[in-house]
Length: 256
Ligand SMILES: Nc1ncnc2c1ncn2[C@@H]1O[C@H](COP(=O)(O)OP(=O)(O)OP(=O)(O)O)[C@@H](O)[C@H]1O
Image (cartoon, rainbow, N blue to C red; front, top):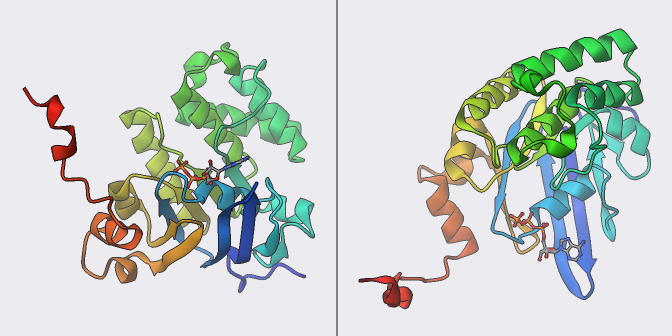
């Protein structure tokens, strides 16, 4: 199938995944229009990471399909993966390299000319304030620094779609502000972003679309304002996934 500008950036049809006997993703249907900035939210264990991993070709679904700009991720993995930059959960990367070496290496793997890979690596390290750790091996990075080098790796080949699993987790406020600017600029420049987050305020601040995953299914999805319906995203979210009814009195032994 050809990639066309009319295709959604991401389309998931009836995606399923079962670990052991537990269905973790139970028929996810989701369409993300090109140019959207979508926040994927859901409780711990709802299936966000599993869904995103299947969407970008990191985890094979039991059934269902994932298309990036009309390209079937599992039938045409090389074509699909050229279109997307991914910040996965629990990033595994070559760690005995400096940040610059890692980015140059990944740039060459992505087929960038050496001078382009070098130039972009330097710019990304500088913008993300990793250049002060120029000689530090990635294995010695803090958790937040790892997120930032992972984001740099996702951006390096200027993909059309970014899929970011919890990109702000463990990132300091100054770096978070920089990342928000980068992501807004990416969308303003015609890119599409799907990011997962537990922070509703962040999703409301950044995203124009939202999808709520609950126990492996999409409970609601669409333009942010439509899903919110004039309420806060947190209220809508708790209504959709169901609060656990805690009153705070259960732990009365904490009071003095
Ligand atoms: N490789 C695996 N083997 C077995 N179970 C798994 C595996 N990966 C995930 N799970 C289970 O699948 C469920 C969904 O996990 P997933 O990481 O997709 O959730 P999530 O919505 O991203 O959660 P969180 O917000 O806590 O990161 C969880 O119950 C998890 O324990």
